[in-house]
Structures are given as C-alpha cells and as structure tokens.
Image (cartoon, rainbow, N blue to C red):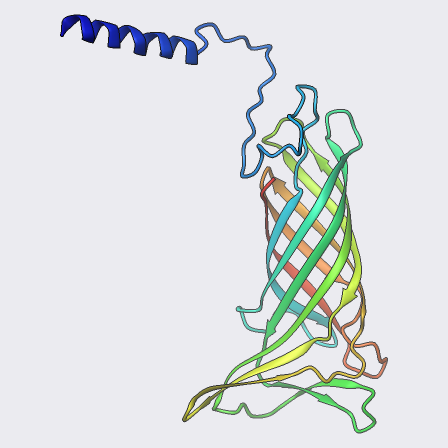
Length: 250
C-alpha cells in the first residue's frame, strides 16, 4: 500500500512539473486569446508573428429615436433596436493600432410612441406624421419599425496590447426595407395586432455615419442616418438616430 501511494505521488508530481514552467521567460510571446471565439484562426494554425485582429463580429443594442420634423427623446423608453455587423479587420499599421473595418451589417430599429399617427395623403405620394388629441384607451402599444442591410466601412484606432482603448469612425451605405407600423389593441378576445407597410414614398437608399468608443470588447455606440425615412419633400422629415452599447465577440 505504501509503495502504491508513493508511485501515485511521484506520478502526480511529474505531471505537475511537466504542465508548469518553473522558470517563466518574460520575453516569450503569449498566445493567450481573451474573449469568445478568439481561438478560431481559420483552416491553419496561427503563426507566432500573426497580427492580432479585433472587432470582427459586433452586436449593437440601441435606443432608437428620430430627428427632423420631430423633437428628440419624446418617444417611449422601449424604443429598442439591434445591429449585427460581420467585418474584416484589415491592419494598416504594423501593430494593428490603426485598421480598416469592412463587411456587412443588418440593422433593426423600433420606435415606440403615443399620440401620433402616420397618414398617407389622397394622392398616395406623401406620408405625414400627425399629432392626435386623444389616445385610444384600447391601444396598448404603437411602434414604427424598419430593417436595413448595408455595407459598413470603418477607420479604427486602438492602443497597443489586447486590453486596449479603441475608437471607430464609420459610415454605411445600404438598402432599406419598407418600414411598417405595428399597433397592439386589447380586445375581449385578447390582443389584436395590426401592421401597415403601405408607405408610397419609403426611402430605399440608406446612408449613415456611426462611431464607437470604449475598451476591448465593449464600447458606446452612436449612429445618425442622413437619408430620410420618406423620400417625398412634402412628407414629414424623419432621420433615424441610435445610441447604445456595443459588444465585440472576436
């Protein structure tokens, strides 16, 4: 029994010695990759000289509002949107302290409001957002929603080391799907949902500017859409604004 315990103790000690470096060398390059999915390097193993790349899959959780003919921050707090960006991080400097981001993005915005109503004129060419004096007591929720698919281009600045400070300045050009309103009513038979996407002058071409500032995986995000929601000059002029938080997975 003593011999068996001695052999087991020596085996554990030898494995521990093999697993740990008793004399760490500070000049060695660390291959530690913090963050989800950082171990994915493609079809081939990463070389020791390979430059670190960051911010290739980014999610933005945002509060959405509109500007133009309407004042900011007059809508409800639950005007929530979500952006998903998949980008290449193309180094410009040797240490990748400056890079170019290029890829694809899908954006979803939803604006929750009250005491307003979208109306199309008799000629079916213009869309107006009008104030209403009373609010229907059976109307529970009222949303204005939209989706866009775009190509973002970003100029990225970051400090050295993986736990870095970063600043992104970018622009997007893309295609906007038809916006729609969603109304939720309380009825005797439960909730009733009515959707309307009949906007004759919905703007299809979308172009915007955005920025991120933060540390490592997290950042503050802001975006302003220069293209109006409706293209007719006589329609209510609305530009979408987003502010929120970004998280980069790898």
